[in-house]
Length: 304
Image (tube, rainbow, N blue to C red; front, side, top):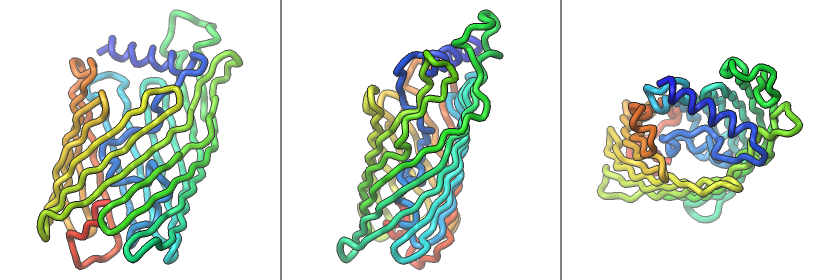
């Protein structure tokens, strides 16, 4: 386990100090399909009422200093054509910790009888903390081994979200500004722009059984494009499915509807990389409460 912890530490140093080092940096959740506001501000307020969602993720369980993430979001319509949202996220991986607070605004217009287009904006900030000196006792005084304490990084983002009664399409860049938070003049610790494309469709198998395939493409400049594909089957009281994250993991998904408003979810990631030999996979819990009232438990709009 110490060996794996050391590997994560070395990756952090390489990622944060090489010039023009890029990668997937936004916090990753396997149950993204239940909380799209994480990646697209235009989703805010597109439901019928006030929505509250919390998620906790424990990645690569059994490996020291593996990533741990928590997020909490709320959003609601505030007018027939407007919505507001807020998301707070904390993520820790080895010596790096980032806390994010973002506020979302959306404006929706009617496109047809049952379709709408939402325009979204968000604004917020990251607070970055990095503790490298305590991890390296062999190179005291090395300028490339440094700490960052409560670095404040403001940012803004945009998104579009088209949705109907049973399908949706969205595109977004939730962090538009590239940020260099390295204190060294020669190094670049970068938070770079991410682009997301998402889509999903709910098929009616009968009056109570639904099938929903969905996909998210993720692109970061100078890094390979990746994607998550999921397939979920929903019944009146439960949902079950799977997801595939490109070259990273197979994911099992389960959701239980305790009432028309309250649902809980669980996902398990089976890691495809070599880390699978040293970890017990990744676990994620989700709790969601929908304050709107509905008479039809299986409306497709419930699932996105």
